[in-house]
Image: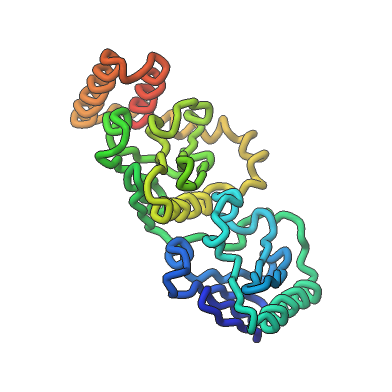
Length: 299
């Protein structure tokens, strides 16, 4: 058993699993504290190293490509302090950090863990349900559906479309870019029907525009990861492409079911609101056409 305890967090290795627990100090980013403890199986690890520095060193773990839905969802764009696979180490604990890294490397050699990409996720991602309030609205995921409720500060186009509900079976992927404080970020839910959409995030009813608190908006990565963990693994995309026709058949049958009277009234009201925005010049012809199509798909 190897263990290192720091203000930034704790790493413990029992020979089969590296258990990473974030610290509770206020210097530890909100994202890591909210994401919580991560249990990394040895077969998910590609390598580990200790990087000594003058005042503080860093213990870093690299995971095999495709092993972690968090890394896939965020595309390596998490700010360095928010990375759960990094631990700040005080100078007087450098020897312990080196020992931890050596123990993990030794176990990788003994178990002959390959470094090739995995064909399935080896980490589960955050538990559901999960809900995050961002600058553009509140996004929730219960394991089967994504729901977006727009904030009062959201663009008029989005508010006119009403809450967005997306079945996980309709999703192709989640695109996520963090708000850096200098440039806006976004989280876009890409479906087969919207994969070629060119709407900017602030007007796209399938995207959250992240422009407010960087600390708070970073939590949207929790939802992006939870959804990604329940989508087909990236290694299966080639197989899914051949099955697209079969995948569409049940949805076509469901689309033939007529909407209820209440849904019909809501649909008409939202289409009228979009028409008014178009006439007032708020929406261009292209934006009106795309947003109208998004509203119709939602019903």
